[in-house]
Length: 88
Image (tube, rainbow, N blue to C red):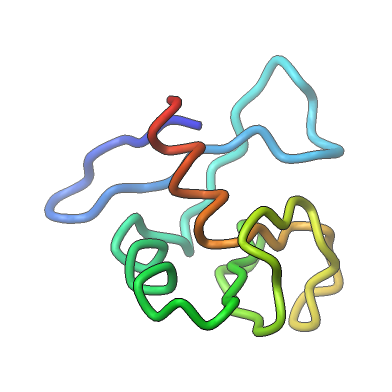
């Protein structure tokens, strides 16, 4: 995962399951601030990197879970996304 600074927010880039492994998938609807806020709430929030929607009931280490909003497999636990940001 990488971030690109745009104005005062970061845009999330993530290798998403099902996307070509050599390319980074741009997640324009997900900001680093949204990820940190969800993790701080400590309420099992997952974030869909495909549509930007938040979803409850996700384990912190969730990866590529089904999204109730868009139907894609793009939901990651907020804590998992923070770890991926750290390892970028």
